[in-house]
Amino acid sequence: MNLILLGAPGAGKGTLASYLIEKMGVPSVSTGNILREAIRNGTELGKQAKAFMDAGKLVSDELVIDLLKERIAQPDCQKGFILDGFPRTIPQAEALDGIAQIDCALSLEVEDSVIEGRMTGRRTCTKCGATYHIVANPPKAEGVCDACGDALQIRADDKLEVVRQRLETYHAQTEPLKEYYGAQGKLKSIDGEQGIEQTKKLACEALGL
Image 1 (spheres, rainbow, N blue to C red):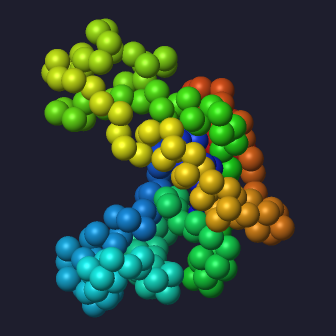
Image 2 (image 1 turned 90 degrees about the vertical axis):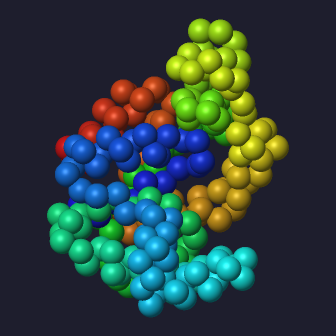
């Protein structure tokens, strides 16, 4: 099965993807990872991508599609894949349709207010990387990492004004994909507010796993 996960930043796509990769026995295909790998390996497409990035520009959709085409042709994708971070816009989805048959777009539905609470409540240890949440998973001592005793901090992209900006961008650019895949009969939506285990269960039911 070739699957796309949709949902706002902080909806829980990463956690669900990790679970589904194992459950379905297919790889996660991340455009970010593909780009980094192509640049590291110095491939022809990697050199083109590096030129964009060195100039401070976004890598073009055409180049990302070429890299994706190369990646999904590899043996580990023969049984399917889960796309991570792509497509983000309708033109990207249309380009993707030209190189791959997408079977399902699974959308995690979470209210903005819930996402704001999730993301602004996150605390990260800059020393060991451990993450906490002031409500869902608080440290034993406020502001102090359980694992190494270092101070916990709010990541720059977890600050409220940044979270709201990211949600605005999502609603304007990426949310229209629900309508796009809905028109193709490929959209399945699940409630992503019920906790991790329930979200996994709903995802499995929606995908017939």
